[in-house]
Image 1: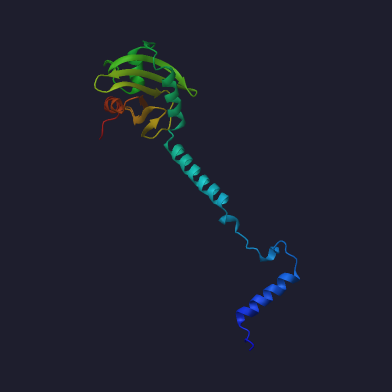
Image 2: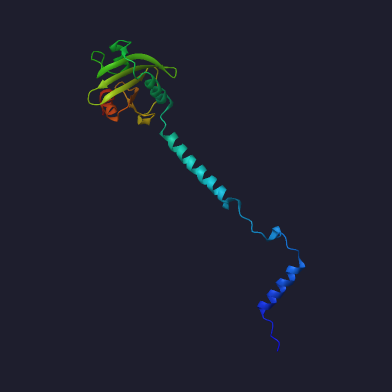
Length: 190
């Protein structure tokens, strides 16, 4: 009794004959599946890493203060422990936009003219009892700084508009000290 050939049997026989017809070896390249370039793991990892690095860099650069403020922070860092009065109080008060016949606010630690990025700046480091140590910079030449604040290189900084309309840069290690100094040096709200 002969069996009718089933489709499965035909497939098996065809495969067996084809396997004998060709030498075993590498599969022809046309039969291999090609992986798209962007679907490879290492490419995806590099893309994710680039996006993360770009985000971190963007955040850091957006928090960075203006160039003049960074120069003031660096200057304050190197003169943090310097004490003395190297200029007359009325001259300094005039540059800070305060009345010249009043005493210097707080307990002055350092009063001197200095150079920040090629600009003449008047440097006042003073201590406020309810805030802490604050360094105030007033510039002799007109500078374009908008009111802003932030934290950079382990200090808080703030740009305020002085009573005479010129910008002042305040630098302190304590945020509370900036609030006290802002009340003393900035223009009162209209």
